[in-house]
Length: 388
Image: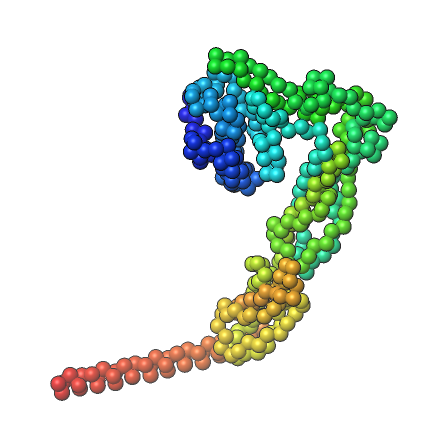
């Protein structure tokens, strides 16, 4: 089943007369918008591939001329294949532009050589915290694995006393040129050297400790500080604890993502705390004072006489400290509910029965008074109507 390919100018959102600089600016803008690291759309990956292919063609004068004259089929018949394939992984946004703008197709320029220092990868780990640890902060010792520079070879990958040799395939350039003869001319494509992976060097005697990688996996322990007020999903950056860089490049960072365990009594919403507290019927009716649990311990609140079931009391400043501003805290909202006893003594039953009788008598009297008032009112209405 064939698929209609979009016009490359439409993909980049530029006119067919756009200059090379306009094409470059359009790509920079759209690359940030549709890169899978920043775009959660399910088709972000395919959009980004399409964008890279469009820029690969329109940024090169030779390929652009072929495309303008013969379209997609002209490129295909000339043996063109997209230079950049992100089917397995995507580069960081900081590397996108170096990858595209450093590459060449046709006469000028050269592909990006990877022989120099490269920054190590960032790492992520999840860390579970108790509810109160997230509220008030804590110190935690974490254990994780990352790549560290190999000491025996000092990160070179070669056995001590030896060094890398110049790649004979690319002559140390890290790039190879491939020229294709087509009916419309010659196409020359520059790609990374497959023999040395673009480094320009070959390790002849690999280090036995790291097997020529220059880095090795190490289990590491670190103590980190969890600030007060962190919440579910908060991401803490531990600088320079990611993988070691390549050939002297800086290390990446470790990102600790927090998972907060639920509390048996308190519920959290942002910086506010919510809880339920059962109060006896006499206190709800007559009023009184009760002790409730808070993040800071117990606190007394006054229950006014006649408080209704479900009333919410606010404890100012008893909530969660604000992240990076511990002098400010949220509120604690306490909802009171009537405690219905399930086991009553004989005396308690008699008192409740007496209370029920008194309540029924009161309700009957109120009903009679209401009936008399209604009858009196209707009588007055009839008198007025009769007189009218």
